[in-house]
Image (cartoon, rainbow, N blue to C red; front, top):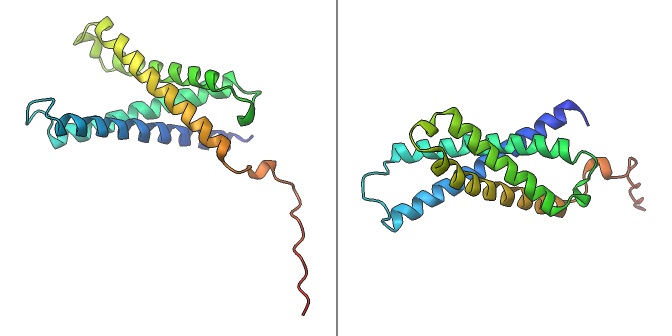
Length: 162
């Protein structure tokens, strides 16, 4: 596999995870607003967009971590031989690690105590990562065969008689 295909795969995984995390974030904010779970005026459109962009970045980073972990940890496996449990474990690790690195990196631990921030965050984003990775594995297994797995010579077309 060429380096460009690996980079394209990692970028695709990052965009997929980023989109998933951003969509879940937007959905959660919609539910919070719809059911009046926070006082009106707290969640402004500007704040909501910023949160969605941050969720996309977090998901993208988690997707890159997952792609790297999966490519290193399961390099001898094909999509059909991958275990859902192992892929889920890699996804959990990727989601939890991405949240931890970003939370510590942007200094959230100076605002919120480490245990109060990381334990729920690691659990939540770890579960999101596990769910995303298992979902992606199931989608990949249902896809048609890749071009590399097809025969090199296509079958000849039947001749049409005049």
